Length: 242
Image (cartoon, rainbow, N blue to C red; front, side):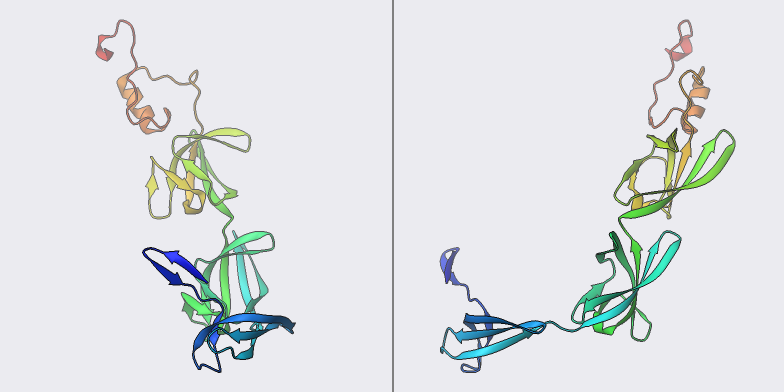
Protein backbone atom coordinates (compact mmCIF):
# COMPACT_ATOMS: atom_id res chain seq x y z
CA UNK A 1 0.00 0.00 0.00
CA UNK A 2 0.99 3.65 -0.31
CA UNK A 3 0.76 6.55 2.09
CA UNK A 4 1.38 10.20 1.41
CA UNK A 5 4.39 11.65 3.19
CA UNK A 6 5.48 15.25 2.63
CA UNK A 7 5.68 16.27 -1.05
CA UNK A 8 5.86 12.73 -2.47
CA UNK A 9 4.35 9.32 -1.89
CA UNK A 10 6.26 7.02 0.43
CA UNK A 11 5.91 3.27 -0.12
CA UNK A 12 5.24 1.21 2.99
CA UNK A 13 6.18 -2.48 2.57
CA UNK A 14 4.59 -5.03 4.89
CA UNK A 15 5.84 -8.45 6.06
CA UNK A 16 9.40 -8.04 4.79
CA UNK A 17 11.34 -11.34 4.83
CA UNK A 18 13.97 -13.03 2.66
CA UNK A 19 12.37 -14.47 -0.48
CA UNK A 20 14.02 -17.69 -1.78
CA UNK A 21 12.82 -16.80 -5.29
CA UNK A 22 14.21 -13.25 -5.45
CA UNK A 23 17.13 -13.85 -3.11
CA UNK A 24 16.32 -10.51 -1.47
CA UNK A 25 14.18 -9.20 1.34
CA UNK A 26 10.76 -8.38 -0.09
CA UNK A 27 7.23 -7.65 1.04
CA UNK A 28 4.93 -10.67 1.34
CA UNK A 29 1.24 -11.46 1.58
CA UNK A 30 0.21 -13.90 4.33
CA UNK A 31 -1.80 -16.75 2.80
CA UNK A 32 -2.11 -18.90 5.91
CA UNK A 33 -1.12 -18.82 9.58
CA UNK A 34 -0.90 -22.06 11.54
CA UNK A 35 0.24 -22.54 15.19
CA UNK A 36 3.05 -25.06 15.56
CA UNK A 37 4.43 -26.07 18.96
CA UNK A 38 5.83 -22.94 20.62
CA UNK A 39 5.56 -20.84 17.45
CA UNK A 40 3.69 -20.23 14.20
CA UNK A 41 4.13 -21.30 10.55
CA UNK A 42 3.30 -18.65 7.95
CA UNK A 43 2.54 -19.48 4.31
CA UNK A 44 3.68 -16.42 2.36
CA UNK A 45 3.51 -15.18 -1.22
CA UNK A 46 6.20 -12.79 -2.47
CA UNK A 47 4.79 -9.50 -3.72
CA UNK A 48 7.58 -9.24 -6.33
CA UNK A 49 7.99 -12.72 -7.87
CA UNK A 50 4.86 -14.48 -6.49
CA UNK A 51 6.99 -17.24 -4.97
CA UNK A 52 5.02 -19.14 -2.31
CA UNK A 53 7.02 -20.40 0.65
CA UNK A 54 6.75 -21.12 4.35
CA UNK A 55 8.43 -19.22 7.19
CA UNK A 56 8.69 -20.78 10.66
CA UNK A 57 8.67 -18.49 13.70
CA UNK A 58 9.57 -20.17 16.98
CA UNK A 59 9.71 -18.66 20.48
CA UNK A 60 13.23 -19.01 21.91
CA UNK A 61 13.42 -21.50 24.79
CA UNK A 62 13.10 -20.03 28.27
CA UNK A 63 16.10 -19.80 30.58
CA UNK A 64 15.80 -19.90 34.34
CA UNK A 65 17.70 -17.08 36.07
CA UNK A 66 18.33 -16.71 39.81
CA UNK A 67 17.10 -13.35 41.13
CA UNK A 68 18.04 -12.08 44.59
CA UNK A 69 15.16 -9.78 45.58
CA UNK A 70 15.94 -7.31 48.37
CA UNK A 71 13.18 -5.55 50.29
CA UNK A 72 14.75 -3.44 53.05
CA UNK A 73 16.70 -5.76 55.39
CA UNK A 74 15.11 -8.90 53.92
CA UNK A 75 16.39 -10.75 50.86
CA UNK A 76 15.28 -13.93 49.12
CA UNK A 77 16.33 -15.86 46.03
CA UNK A 78 13.70 -16.75 43.44
CA UNK A 79 14.04 -18.38 40.03
CA UNK A 80 12.36 -16.65 37.09
CA UNK A 81 11.98 -17.99 33.54
CA UNK A 82 12.95 -15.49 30.81
CA UNK A 83 13.12 -15.78 27.02
CA UNK A 84 16.63 -16.65 25.94
CA UNK A 85 16.77 -13.70 23.52
CA UNK A 86 15.77 -11.14 26.18
CA UNK A 87 18.27 -8.48 27.28
CA UNK A 88 18.48 -7.07 30.83
CA UNK A 89 19.94 -3.68 31.76
CA UNK A 90 20.67 -2.11 35.15
CA UNK A 91 17.71 0.04 36.15
CA UNK A 92 15.10 -2.12 34.38
CA UNK A 93 11.81 -2.35 36.29
CA UNK A 94 9.84 -5.61 36.43
CA UNK A 95 6.95 -7.09 38.43
CA UNK A 96 7.10 -10.20 40.59
CA UNK A 97 4.88 -11.38 43.44
CA UNK A 98 2.59 -8.32 43.21
CA UNK A 99 5.52 -5.94 43.66
CA UNK A 100 7.84 -3.88 41.47
CA UNK A 101 11.59 -4.43 41.44
CA UNK A 102 14.54 -2.55 39.91
CA UNK A 103 17.53 -4.43 38.51
CA UNK A 104 20.52 -3.38 40.59
CA UNK A 105 23.27 -5.81 39.53
CA UNK A 106 23.77 -8.23 36.65
CA UNK A 107 26.38 -11.01 36.84
CA UNK A 108 27.67 -12.75 33.72
CA UNK A 109 28.60 -16.43 33.41
CA UNK A 110 31.98 -15.67 35.05
CA UNK A 111 30.30 -13.92 37.97
CA UNK A 112 31.48 -10.47 36.87
CA UNK A 113 29.13 -7.47 37.12
CA UNK A 114 27.82 -6.14 33.81
CA UNK A 115 25.66 -3.11 32.98
CA UNK A 116 23.81 -4.95 30.20
CA UNK A 117 23.66 -8.61 29.19
CA UNK A 118 21.56 -11.06 27.20
CA UNK A 119 19.72 -13.61 29.32
CA UNK A 120 21.76 -16.45 27.77
CA UNK A 121 24.90 -14.86 29.27
CA UNK A 122 23.58 -14.11 32.77
CA UNK A 123 24.08 -16.25 35.86
CA UNK A 124 22.44 -14.08 38.56
CA UNK A 125 20.55 -10.80 38.98
CA UNK A 126 20.12 -8.65 42.10
CA UNK A 127 17.02 -6.45 42.29
CA UNK A 128 15.73 -3.93 44.84
CA UNK A 129 12.10 -3.26 45.63
CA UNK A 130 11.12 -0.06 43.80
CA UNK A 131 7.43 0.53 44.52
CA UNK A 132 8.01 0.75 48.30
CA UNK A 133 11.12 2.07 50.02
CA UNK A 134 12.29 2.24 53.64
CA UNK A 135 13.17 5.72 54.94
CA UNK A 136 15.12 6.11 58.18
CA UNK A 137 13.94 8.74 60.65
CA UNK A 138 15.53 10.57 63.57
CA UNK A 139 12.82 11.82 65.93
CA UNK A 140 13.90 14.65 68.24
CA UNK A 141 11.80 15.75 71.19
CA UNK A 142 13.60 18.28 73.38
CA UNK A 143 17.07 16.90 74.07
CA UNK A 144 16.08 13.29 73.33
CA UNK A 145 16.35 11.62 69.92
CA UNK A 146 15.36 8.15 68.79
CA UNK A 147 15.53 6.30 65.43
CA UNK A 148 12.64 4.83 63.47
CA UNK A 149 11.80 3.61 59.97
CA UNK A 150 8.82 4.11 57.67
CA UNK A 151 7.91 2.19 54.50
CA UNK A 152 6.34 4.39 51.83
CA UNK A 153 5.90 4.55 48.02
CA UNK A 154 9.16 5.51 46.32
CA UNK A 155 7.51 8.42 44.46
CA UNK A 156 6.11 10.06 47.61
CA UNK A 157 7.43 13.62 48.08
CA UNK A 158 8.69 15.09 51.35
CA UNK A 159 9.55 18.77 51.94
CA UNK A 160 11.49 20.38 54.74
CA UNK A 161 9.46 22.62 57.02
CA UNK A 162 6.22 20.69 56.49
CA UNK A 163 4.20 18.81 59.09
CA UNK A 164 3.81 15.03 58.85
CA UNK A 165 1.92 12.56 61.02
CA UNK A 166 3.94 9.65 62.36
CA UNK A 167 2.51 7.10 64.79
CA UNK A 168 -0.41 9.43 65.44
CA UNK A 169 1.82 12.40 66.38
CA UNK A 170 2.63 15.64 64.53
CA UNK A 171 6.25 16.22 63.53
CA UNK A 172 7.96 18.91 61.51
CA UNK A 173 10.51 17.81 58.90
CA UNK A 174 13.58 19.73 59.99
CA UNK A 175 16.08 18.34 57.45
CA UNK A 176 16.43 15.67 54.75
CA UNK A 177 19.60 13.70 54.03
CA UNK A 178 20.11 12.24 50.56
CA UNK A 179 23.19 10.23 51.45
CA UNK A 180 25.51 12.80 49.88
CA UNK A 181 24.42 15.81 51.93
CA UNK A 182 21.79 17.22 54.25
CA UNK A 183 19.45 20.04 53.27
CA UNK A 184 17.28 22.32 55.41
CA UNK A 185 15.36 23.60 52.42
CA UNK A 186 14.14 21.33 49.67
CA UNK A 187 11.87 18.54 48.42
CA UNK A 188 12.86 14.95 47.65
CA UNK A 189 11.24 11.72 46.59
CA UNK A 190 11.27 8.97 49.20
CA UNK A 191 13.43 6.81 46.92
CA UNK A 192 16.17 9.50 47.09
CA UNK A 193 16.09 9.98 50.87
CA UNK A 194 18.63 8.34 53.17
CA UNK A 195 17.27 9.83 56.42
CA UNK A 196 14.79 12.47 57.58
CA UNK A 197 15.19 14.50 60.76
CA UNK A 198 11.89 15.22 62.51
CA UNK A 199 11.37 17.68 65.37
CA UNK A 200 8.31 17.95 67.53
CA UNK A 201 6.65 21.23 66.48
CA UNK A 202 5.82 23.54 69.40
CA UNK A 203 2.38 25.11 69.48
CA UNK A 204 2.00 28.88 69.43
CA UNK A 205 0.85 28.74 73.05
CA UNK A 206 4.07 26.96 74.04
CA UNK A 207 6.51 29.31 72.34
CA UNK A 208 6.53 32.91 71.17
CA UNK A 209 9.83 34.75 70.57
CA UNK A 210 10.04 37.88 72.69
CA UNK A 211 13.21 39.43 71.23
CA UNK A 212 14.97 39.56 67.89
CA UNK A 213 17.67 37.25 69.24
CA UNK A 214 15.08 34.67 70.35
CA UNK A 215 13.33 34.93 67.00
CA UNK A 216 16.56 34.28 65.09
CA UNK A 217 17.58 31.38 67.30
CA UNK A 218 14.11 29.82 67.07
CA UNK A 219 14.15 30.10 63.30
CA UNK A 220 17.58 28.44 63.10
CA UNK A 221 16.41 25.60 65.36
CA UNK A 222 13.30 25.02 63.23
CA UNK A 223 10.82 26.14 65.87
CA UNK A 224 9.25 28.61 63.45
CA UNK A 225 9.12 26.15 60.54
CA UNK A 226 10.32 26.91 57.05
CA UNK A 227 10.37 30.70 56.77
CA UNK A 228 13.46 32.10 55.01
CA UNK A 229 12.55 35.67 55.96
CA UNK A 230 10.43 35.47 59.11
CA UNK A 231 8.50 38.58 60.07
CA UNK A 232 9.97 40.37 63.05
CA UNK A 233 7.75 40.43 66.13
CA UNK A 234 6.21 43.83 66.85
CA UNK A 235 5.45 44.80 70.41
CA UNK A 236 3.55 47.92 71.37
CA UNK A 237 5.78 50.44 73.10
CA UNK A 238 9.02 48.79 71.95
CA UNK A 239 10.51 51.03 69.23
CA UNK A 240 13.40 48.63 68.49
CA UNK A 241 11.00 46.42 66.46
CA UNK A 242 9.39 49.20 64.43
